Amino acid sequence: MSDLFTTIETPIAKYEQPLGLFINNEFVKGVSGKTFETINPTTEKPITSVYEANEKDVDIAVAAARKAFEGSWSKVTPTERGRMLAKLADLFERDSDILSSIESLDNGKAFVMAKGDVANAAGCLRYYAGYADKIHGQTIDQNSESLTYTRHEPVGVCGQIIPWNFPLLMWSWKIGPAIATGCTVIIKTAEQTPLSGLYAAKLIKEAGFPPGVINIISGFGRVAGAAISSHMDIDKVAFTGSTMVGRTILQAAAKSNLKKVTLELGGKSPNIVFNDADIDNAISWSNFGIFFNHGQCCCAGSRILVQEDIHDQFVARFKERAAKNQLGNPFEMGTFQGPQVSQLQFDRIMEYINHGKQGGATVALGGERHGTEGYFIQPTVFTDVTSDMKIAQEEIFGPVVTIQKFKDEEEAIKIGNDTCYGLAAAVHTKNVNTAIRVSNAIKAGTVWINAYNMISYQAPFGGFKQSGLGRELGSYALENYTQVKTVHYRLGDALFA
Ligand code: ADP
Image (cartoon, rainbow, N blue to C red; front, side):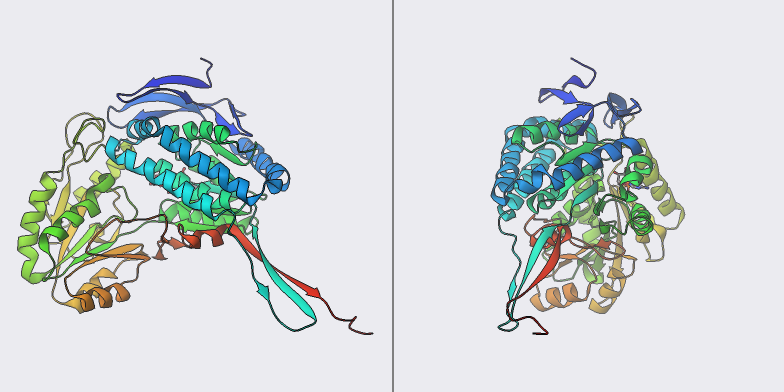
């Protein structure tokens, strides 16, 4: 064992964990040689330490990605690119137990949920593998004297900055379309969850990607992240994370080389339940809508709006349902909710809970830490909430939901749209007209009808208002990684003949 690898044993798998930065298909120590610890949120103890990238490492990774983009990668055929991505998807499936247990260890998510993430990540990579040789421009008939056509060329070297809530899934959402379109990438994982991305780096090499095509670095936002967003030789940056950091990235891009930017940011999504909804269905989806992934979802249904006739019944039954969510060690069978990812997130959420308590809302369920070890928080339900309260306006990113009462459709839409965000929403009703009218009126990038959190790599995902710029997933994501070139070829005689 060198200090670039360590053996890690989880209740599911024993494996070799890379610790270095992955640049040019090699694990390296980084220019400063500095490392940082990654913490197991279930025990609050360090798992291991990984090497930390600084600005110089970003420069080295960008140079590698640029060289590959202009050289070896540009000669790889689209079919071959697709084959490598599909192979990577196969390797994700082969090593699914290892990858999933790394997610549970480093992030704290329940192992069964992590298995779902890995299956989706593999599906996403395979989906974009299929697009690699189907990216075409148009021929445009103008007149008999010219041939005009467009080429959808790869945008170039892409910097990708991802969060800790779905480490591998976000990794695949970024890598899939970038690689399918012929770009090269430097991806920075979140400092809280660096391990799964580094294990996946091994699979990149095994899938046959040439050196420099995909580079993976561990490091902090204000150092490595900032170096990516302000780099003069990165052509595009794709970011998923908080709205505050998204703003900083947009500014850095504007101040440097005006690199193209896509942002997938925060949310405060309304989950609207009408009197005529199937109440059992609405309760289970609402529970999944907020408490899935411990509330650490940008599209979490964190504001439940219930029509007045069923409000009290809904609250009573929703509390019963939420109280049954099993909290505990992510590796234990039956666990639905693990710990929050870090002490910082735990503290932020508890601060919001205290704010809600002091601000006049009623704690209908939870509101406290769960247990004495690990960053666990009880599923928390606030009632008697008004739209002007901080807990109804700001993204909490934890297992905390507010329930508000509304009178009619008009009021539901008004409250639903009353935040600066617009990522997602849901409508529960048996009336098709109500469902369509309300989903049209809500300002959000995704609306679920009689469901929640159903995300597919085949369908676009992104935000209205301050929830983001651009769309990920589906064929829409390909536009983020290509630029259109128009070629006019003159067929006729010289103009001044
Ligand atoms: P959270 O608050 O949920 O941790 P962030 O938006 O802070 O979410 O983090 C998401 C990603 O953005 C992480 O990879 C983090 O390192 C990165 N990041 C944080 N600050 C910056 C920054 N100033 N510039 C670029 N990236 C950053």
